[in-house]
Amino acid sequence: ILNVEQSPQSLHVQEGDSTNFTCSFPSSNFYALHWYRWETAKSPEALFVMTLNGDEKKKGRISATLNTKEGYSYLYIKGSQPEDSATYLCAFSADSWGKLQFGAGTQVVVTP
Amino acid sequence: GAVVSQHPSRVICKSGTSVKIECRSLDFQATTMFWYRQFPKQSLMLMATSNEGSKATYEQGVEKDKFLINHASLTLSTLTVTSAHPEDSSFYICSARSGTSRQTQYFGPGTRLLVL
Image (cartoon, rainbow over all chains, first blue to last red):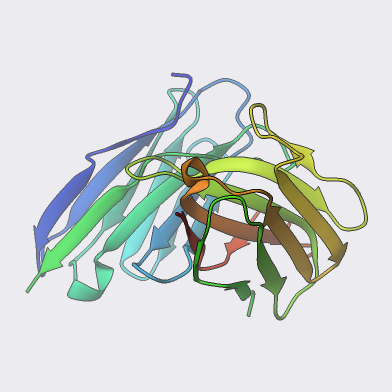
């Protein structure tokens, strides 16, 4: 994989349900994987920066896992709430200079 | 903490004019700032990296004479789109990296540019 790919492109979730989605990235020259949450008309909010294979990080009801050997990361939302509605972006970096290669995002819509 | 502002949030200009976009880190010093562009239905694409006090580094395919970047202080970077044309219409967004958290980039809210 040469690009960063996110799937699905969008998903609808019923309030209270849990969901997850994927970010695939190049498995070579890995330095870090970033997750952002982006609500319309706001700044993207940094959720996680993950660097080690097997990393699991959690922030409230949101968590993420990382597999650098196979080049994927999952983001999980437990007990989705309407305020979780946003586009979730992942970004791959191959070095410490900070150049981020973004996926196109997964748009999550949580309906009451 | 770690707030980045961007101004203006949207701008409409005539073809051939220049537009300046400001990116400010409000509560931290940003040694490095990044400028991205996003066309509809596409990913954020890095345009350039700027370090305070030095020339910006542009990504392949980005014209440095068209997109002038100045990073004169640790809290301000500007992107000037010179002689803008309709194909420059896009969403421009900046990010800044704190010296204390080198990996996390904090983003501004972006600027929507429409060139008529």
